[in-house]
Length: 611
Image 1 (cartoon, helix red, strand yellow):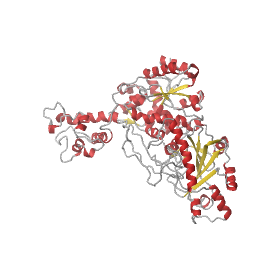
Image 2 (cartoon, rainbow, N blue to C red):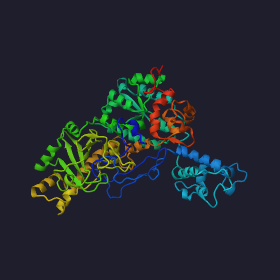
Image 3 (cartoon, rainbow, N blue to C red):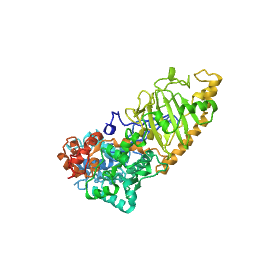
Image 4 (tube, rainbow, N blue to C red):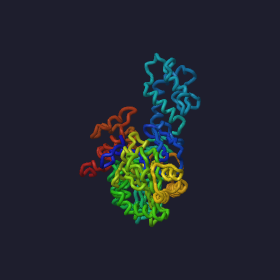
C-alpha cells in the first residue's frame, strides 16, 4: 500500500513517478531501505543527457534489482546484520563457536561476522561464493548436518543470503547512541536562543531526521534525505533565491532550520503543511513550550521524510505552489497567451515559441508534441506544455494536421523564480488533475504505472529537460512525412518547429539553468539518484519495530513493552520477531499511538489531554 492513501483527501491510486513532456530515458532508482535496496535501471534506447520527458515517468524504467547504490548502506542492515548473527549463533555455534569443545574444520569464529569475511568464508556481495551460505543450502552435505534438529529455516537462509549480498563488509551504525526526544528539543531551543535573532524567531521552523539515526542508519544513508529536503523546499518556493536548510547539529546533521520567508511561505501556510501531516506532533514538554513561545507555533518541527512524502504530491504540492485549478488560470498568472504566441510565431517567426512532435515516447503510448514558451517579463523563466493523446488517428494525429489536432491531456513544466521547476497535469479540457490518465501516459517507477504530479516530475527531470528530437519537421525536410501540406503550411510548420539542432540547444539551455539551481541548493545533479523521488519511494517501505519506535521517539525495547497498552491492535505484529507492518497501517495509527503513550498532542487526542 502506498503512503498516498494516508495523505490524500481524495482517492488516489498509489505513489508514482510522473512523465511530463516527451520521450527520453528516465532512470528508476530505489533507495535501499527497511525492506531492501535498489539499483537504478536505465533505458537502453540510446538517449542520454538533458531531457524533455515531462514529469517522473520512467522512460526506460524497471524494477529494483535489490542491489544497493554505491556508497549507501541499506537501512535494513541495522537489523539484518544482528539477525544473521543470531541465526549463526542458534544453528552453528554449537560446533563452530569459539567455546565449542571441538571446533570443526578450523572454523571456530562463526559468531564473528568480521572474521568470517576476513577469512574468506563470506565474500561480501557474493553469496554464491561464500562458503558459509553454500554449506547452508548444500543438499548433499548441509550444515548443520542433517542429523541436527536445530537448523535454519528457509527464511533464515534468505536472511543470511541477503546480509551477504547487501550488508557484509559495510559499516553499521546500529549501536550508535540513542538521541532522546528531550535532547532533540534542547538542541532546537539552544539554536533559537543562540543563532536566531529575536525578530526572526517567529519565522523559524525545523525538520528532523533524528528518527533515521535512531533506527540505526549511518550518515551516508541519511545524506540523500538531506539532499531531498534541500531540493524540495526550494522546489516549493516562489522566491528568486535558493536557500538550503541549515543543520543546527553540524556533527550529525540531523536537525535543520529554515526561515519560512525564504520560500515565500507564511505562518498560515506552515500550519496547513503541519495540519496535513499525520506525523506532526505538538510536544508538551517544558522545553517544547519555550520553543513554541519563541517561534509562535505549536508545531515547530516535522519529520523530514514525512514532509517529503506529503508535500511532493497533490494536494499539498498544489497548495504550497498555489497552482490553480485550470491551465488557463496558470497561464493568466504567468501572463502567457499560448494561442497568441503561436499565431505570432507562425506569422512573423520571432523565435519565441518552439515545438517538437515525435512518434514514439516511452512515457506515452501514442504520439507526443511538446511546446516551449518564454515568460514575457522574465528571460530566465520558461513554460513548457505537452500535448498527449489517447490514439493516433483522426484529430489526434498531429502529423497529419499539426494545427487542428485535439489532445486528451497535457503536462506542464514551468521555471520557478529560483531556476527550479514546477509541474502541472491537465485533462483534455485544461482542468488540473492529480494523476495522468493511465490510457495516455505511464510510469515505470511504480508497479501500477500511475503518473502523479510533483514527485514524479522531479524524479524524471533530475537533470532538467530530457533530450528529444522532432520527427514532424525532420520528415518534411527529408521528403517524407504523413501529411500533405501546401507551401504556406510548410512555412508555418518551419516557423513553429525548429530544426533538431536548434531545438536541442533550447533544451540544453533550460537544463543548464535548472541544474545550476539544483547545485546551488547543495544537491548534486550529475548522479544516478534523484533525491525527492528516492525518499518518496523509500518512505512507503514496510515499518519495522525499530523504525516505528524511532518515529515515536522511543527505543525499540521500550516501544515493544508498550504496544500491548495501545487502544488499537493494528501494531501488535511489531512484537513478533522479524515482522514489519505496512506503512499506511502505521500512518493511520500514529496519531492515536502518540496520544495513548502521552508523547504529545495530535488531532486524535481527547479534549483536555494536555492537562
